[in-house]
Image (cartoon, rainbow, N blue to C red; front, top):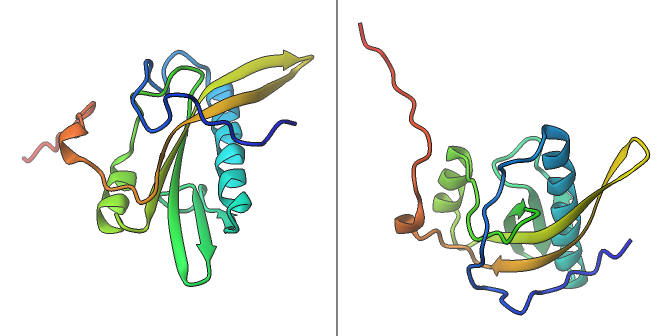
Length: 150
């Protein structure tokens, strides 16, 4: 299935293109799952034990190796991955655990249909930050919640 991660020639740098726009929910899910497989493989190949926590935690993968642990946030995109979408919970978690958090961005994932099934393949790791210390000046608000006080 070609899981082995490939690092782009511009790994660890910003590229073109954002994440999360223009795809259907089914397509976004396929891209996300593909990115998580690539990120998981990256850590398992380095000797980490990896568990999927995406359904219940503000990070995607928990990796442990001896007494070390990493809270891994994974972002996948069919584009270049220079901008990603982070939830409030994701940001708060990384700020609390910045020395044990990691970010993996898998870009250029390819989507194709095989009959009725949507298949995501390929992808290159264009960003791998471990540890991931959020540069708060790089955060940009995209939504606000306003509470009406009566």
